[in-house]
Length: 268
Length: 327
Image (tube, rainbow over all chains, first blue to last red; front, side, top):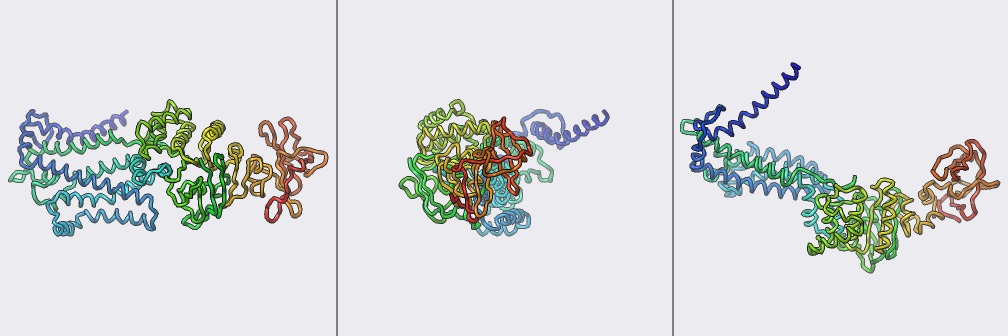
């Protein structure tokens, strides 16, 4: 009995620990005097209009959406094609190649490569370019995405493809009609994963987008301080709330629309 | 409608294995043809080479008057049912059946109409909106057949069509398959490792081993006069007795042996196995063991001495060196 009570108390404490930031995110944006603590708010919409009046707040969210949309689409499309090819083509040293890619990717986008990437982008004239930055972000995510998607592609039975081929499907049709739909849970997973990663990426946009009008939300958040260096609490709570909505919305949408399910069609 | 002509065909895998080795075969128009053999004998590879899923290293494959050796699978006008059926899990039964038409860009209403008509013919009428995962094994098999039929191909290829069904369903599906083939009059080649299935279904059987055909003939020929000891051993639900005598091997099926006053073999009964309507009796004849089949109520007691004989026409002689049929 005592054990049981103790167990529930422990769970309650852990729950509270994780719930407090959520509750803060729900209440602070609508509090007349938002603080860093949690309290019942004096309801107001003043913070919302303050955030909307901020010269860069909304722009940065739009920037984030554009940046992530490009990076996510590039990652998902290229990773799906590459994973399919790597899954089906037999080349010597294929697995080694995959592991090397995975290993290098953490180096390529990591802090270690900050300077070379900056110099490279500068010479390519891609500093302050949303598209260029999105490509660098996508490049960093690709190896891991290919690695994960290859497992999903491996799981698509060959007989599906062969069956489609015998009925006359061209390679493009085999991919579009059969392989991608069957590997859909994997593609959906990679899509969400890539978006979330790109959405939270601070270092690369911070490095490559010097113009504040181009910067995404993750970078702008850093500038929401007043001259004294303390947090601008009229903007940060609302901004944080807006910042978290797309990720949650995307997850719910993908999970509902493309659900992570698999209907077996092979008798095994 | 078309027959299949195979001449000098070899299929070699990248690792150098010759799965099909210089093989010649003619399959007549409208024939139900079985490729029979133990696993690894090359029967599935031969089927896949006919379909175009494996490339031919040498030789040619012809369907009707066309040489299809270098054509991709989709241009050969063949339809294939895979061992695992390969129904697309994300499509409904109707979409699966209509898939060959969708690939060819046939209009949606025609696709639908064909799916409904074909499904009706294979008693899948009420299941059109189900997904493959919601079907039983037998229904999945019929859906895969329906999809192959809807392709309106000249040749139907079936890879182990009955192996994924449980025993009772298998008999039902066997009858169904034969009936369907007779109705469609479609040249059909099926692969099986089950000799009973091949005997029951096929118009002609090719018994294969290590990429070559050991014997080609009607089920009766293959059963009554196996061309060599390999085929003799492989065909028949109870294995053929193969007893060395001098430079020859005497081959006689247990079903043809019966007790007699004078005969081929004499020995004492060592084992009696109940097969239902009949029993299989094993005799110890010195070094060799000989089996024979008796009706259910005539089993001898273990230890009795028995002499068995068979009609002369049923006793085959094989060469001991080559294993080939002498007479």
